[in-house]
Length: 342
Image (cartoon, rainbow, N blue to C red; front, side):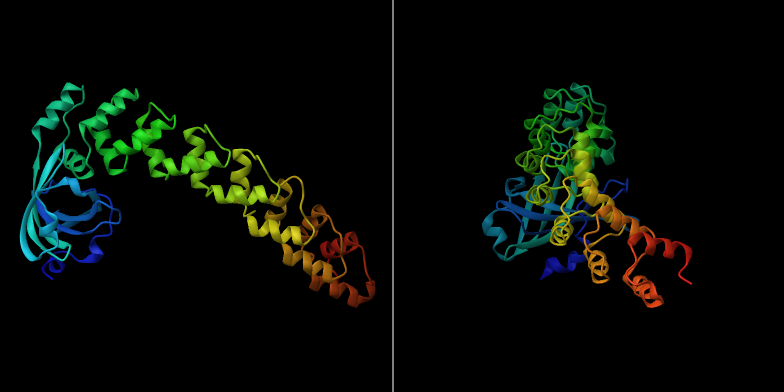
């Protein structure tokens, strides 16, 4: 098919704009069925002086002005349409065949967008910043929403940065609807960069963690603390833990499997910090089982950690017994280990 010649699939994976600063006058486009209802997967490729950049994401059908369903479902017919956004327009022409198409575009910045930014007290963007805002779909409605939520007035550069980091109108509205009016736009960008989205916030709320600070949300996301992990702790009897405790348990590998295995071995301390320390010292079910097999039953977690720290293993215990020590106490084994059996 003709569109396959224009763009290689391997070049379409990048979802964000490259850091090149030469604004393309034209480039190539490829369209495939989108991953969501009412969208198309748009990928564009452009470049200057031998360097190419790629951008791609699902785009609502309504943004493809002049492109009909009949044309998309055709068998190689020529198409001409526009992707019109506040900051600029991609004028596209090419071909479609059975729902997939490709071709070329020319880029036209919108001078009225710059004028409207100025009316709102925002400096004129550079050509590259305006192109970034065009590709990301940044419009005046986002600027007005930021003002409504009393965010600091952005510069054109910060608007472009927000655009490339996925802080769009929908994200700002959704985060605001959940009570997050951060004031500082860089904090908003940081939340987006770290994967803090409305779904994540809602899921934590259902798990009992509501009205968290933006910093706490970022920390939980970064450390992999999600509702599933919280539920596993709840089922193990560790409920209503603080944020720091959740992060510490996750970071130290005290997960559902470790807790269940330790409980099966007879260790279910009321304070989960006991499990953190045991995990850190290398006390796991296999180590406990090895000492039980050597005749040491009913040791406390503190005793197990002490034995592990001093290098007491089943093999060493068997060597001690082989030297005629019978069944020495744990203290005696540790003393022998520290001083050298020989």
